[in-house]
Image (cartoon, rainbow, N blue to C red; front, side, top):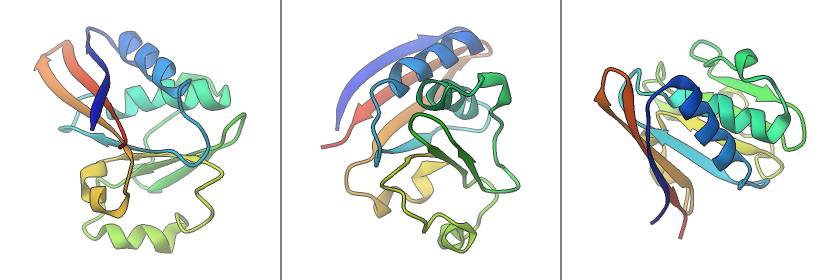
Length: 142
């Protein structure tokens, strides 16, 4: 994997902006696996990614913790997946991820649970630095 963006974020707006910047690079069929501890900003960066790809207001993007999968329509449709509550990630296929993903960008929170399923996903590694600062590194497939 090759690092394409590495930044410390000091606010939610920084993280959303980084998500927008990254989202502008994505195309149909791309898989993005978000990895990091609870509360490190996975949903926040997803707000920016979805906003860049679909035009949806970032304030209208929420984590699909209970529904597991949320679809966003727009320029490039996005499937937003949150695996936090799933003990067996295989269960997501029963919830609709089997529908054609090649016409979408798929963004997966807790992506480490299904990392082995994909050959060339983008990896977004997020980590706490302190209460207000996150380290974010985006790595390209291949």
